[in-house]
Image (cartoon, rainbow, N blue to C red; front, side, top):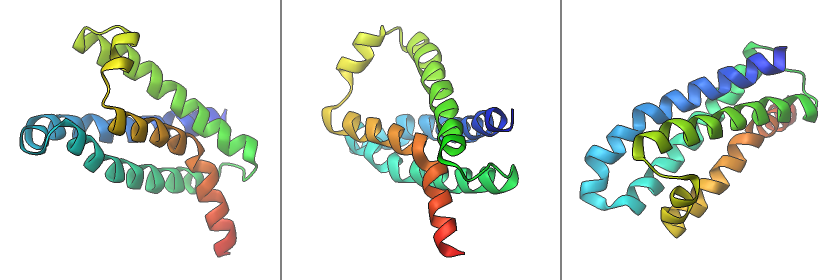
Length: 134
């Protein structure tokens, strides 16, 4: 139950940040710099949010330091993120999943897919970092 709670909270915070940054990217950055550059500029911000959030949740909820617990937290958050993206974003844009995947910029899309993987393993990565620090 603790891992589920941690995964849901991780998803909510990171998705909420992305939900706030999305309109900023679309309304102000895309018209000035283009879609690819706007998405690439957003990635380090989202990565920093994921790092801080994962570290905070792991400590706050005392998620056990085992890889299965930490990856479980990240897997739950990733699953919720993909469900939210495929339902909310696709319904707002009117795309099918296939259209959505084929219309992504090749560079920014690849960075995004890598970022999703990093998002999923971040609870484990922050655990290893904090274990080395102690």
